[in-house]
Length: 192
Length: 346
Image (cartoon, rainbow over the protein chains, first blue to last red):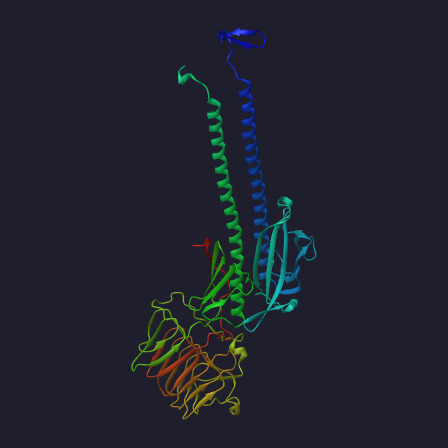
C-alpha cells in the first residue's frame, strides 16, 4: 500500500506517516490497565482492612491484658469481699498503692458491654476501650477441705474466678467477632 | 523484515510482565498478612496461657494454705475443662517450688515457676548441717524426704522420699518463737531450775489423769528419767536442752493438734530408752540424737535440727506428716519469684 490515512492531511505517503498507537492498541491498553488497576485497588483495600483489623486486635489484646492484670493484682490484696455476683465484684482493701492505710472499696462492674472500675464510689473508669466489648463474669469459690466448691456468698469466697471474653464492637465482620477469652483465678490470700 | 525491529507483541509482553509483578506483590502481601495473623493469634493464646497457668499457681497456693498439698500434681483443669485450655501445677516440697504449666491446644504454652517456702517443715529429716548414722548402726525406714545443709549418711536406712545427692545450700530451718509472743505466752505450765529434772518421768505440774496435756515451758534444760512407761499428751518447750535418758520401756508423746512434741532451743536427745512413739515434730535449735533405743520405734511427724541429726542403735520408722504446720514457727511469705518459658508448643 502506497498511502496511509491521516486525519488532517487525508491520504499521505507512507514515508510521511507519523508513528502512534492504533485504536485496537489503545483499547487493549485501557482494558488491561483497568484490570490491573482494579487488582491493585483490591490489594490496597485488603491491606487497609488488614491494618484496621490488626489495630483492633492490638486494642483487644491491650484491653484484655491490662484489665486482667489490674483485676488479678488488686484482688490479691482484697481483705473482704462485700459484693459478689456474675457481673459485680466489690471488695475492701487497705493495701492500695496510695499514701494512706485507709480501707478503700474497689468495685468492678460490667455495665452494658463494658467493664468499669471505681474506688470508694467515685467515678466509673472504663477498663476496656472503644473498640473492645467485654462479656465476663465472676465466680466465687470456697475451700471445703481440699476441694473447691462454688459459693455465691461474698464473705465465704476464698478464691475468685474471672472469665472474660473480649470482642470487637465494630460490625466489620457483620456481627461482633470474638477475639479472645481469658480465664483466671485469684486466691484471696489477704482475706480477713 | 528483520524480526528484531518488529514491535509486534510488545504490549503483550509488557502487560504480562506487569501482571507478574502485581501477582508477586499480591502473594508477598498475602504471606505477610498470614504471618501477622499467626503472630496476633499466638499473642492471644500466650495471654490466655499466662492467666490460666497463674490460676494453677493460685489454686495450689490456696490449697497449701488450707492444709492440702502433697508432692506431685495438686491441681488440674477442673475450672476450665473446656477441652483445649488446660493447666496443671506440680509441687516440690524439697525445693518449695510450684510449677504451673498451661497449654492452649493446638498452639502455645506458658510455664510459671514460683518459690513459695509455704511450710516451715518440708521434710521428714531436716538438718542445717549433717544427718548421719553412727555406731552401732541404725536401721528402718524414713517415709518422706531428707534435706540437709552439709552431708548425709543414712547407712542401711531406707528413704522413700527424696534423698538429694547434693546438700541444700539454701536449706530453710525455721525458728520457733520462745518469747512471750510465742510459746512462753502460750504456756500452760512453767518450770525453771538448773536443770529441771522429772525424775519419776512425770511433770510435777498438770493433770496426770489425762497425761499432762498443755504446753510445758522450761526455762533452761530439762532431763527426764523414769523407771517405766512415760507418756505426755502435751508439748515440751525448753529454752535449753531436752534429754530423755529414762531407761523406760516406752516413751509416748501425743501433742494436740499441730503443736510440736518437743521444741528445744538447744539439743534434744533420746538415749537408753525403748519403744518410742512420737506423734509430732521433734525440733532442736542444735542437735537431735536418737541413740541406743530398743524395741519398735515410730515417729509420726518430722525431725528438724538446726545442726545435726544422729541415729545409732535403733530400728526406727519415720512417717512424715507433710501437713505439719506448728504454731509460732516463722514462715517465709508467699510470692512469685519468676516465670519462665512461653511460646509455641515444642
